Amino acid sequence: MTRIGDKIKTLRSENGMTQKTLAKKLGVSEKFINEIESGKRVANEAIITRISKIFGKQLDDVNMYAEEQAAEKAEKKEYTKVNKVIKKSEANDVWSDALSSILKNVPVYNMDLKTVISTRQLPVVANKIEGYAQDKVSFVEIENDEMLGFRIAKGDIAFVHMTSEIINNSICIIEYNNEKMIRQIKKIDSSKILLISNTSSVRTQTVNTKELKVLAKLEKVEIKL
Image (cartoon, rainbow, N blue to C red):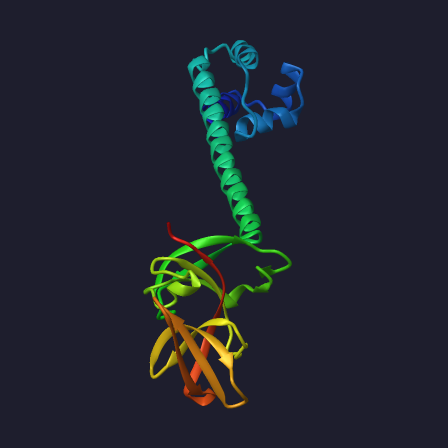
């Protein structure tokens, strides 16, 4: 109930007047009076003036009216402000969801393939990145010049996809003698592999396929100038 509604109800009761009678005198519906008294409707200045004349008392509610109108406007303004904030937040969420389905953060690891140095965004096409499953790709920062002859130098960033397959003539990150390294792989036969590195000259090493583990295959390298 509002201050205006409360005072109108008090004056009406003191004068033994029903809502219906007051409504008839004002030329409005009984529902209109009920809504004013209950606070569901705000009485305007014209109604307040007419009620004052009926009861012969100054309601002194011009200020009340102004205050209640101001309060109502403030409430609407606050609601609009909150609603805008919510809508803005919802819009940001929608854009984030949309972008997450188009771009994906791909980790940049050091050679241990565990420590994340940074991330890079790559486009997702047909639910894949560069033709590979999203959870099977990453970047790796090259830590030495052992493959300099292949134009792969320390500080370069390689895009790789995780695989354990031994692919002939591929350049891969492998684990050999508990050490991770990058080597070119050449198959000699079903049980032997040639590992090739090239710092200033070509170096080769023949190993048994069971002695090494392929971790990832290099697909392309960003050269650091």
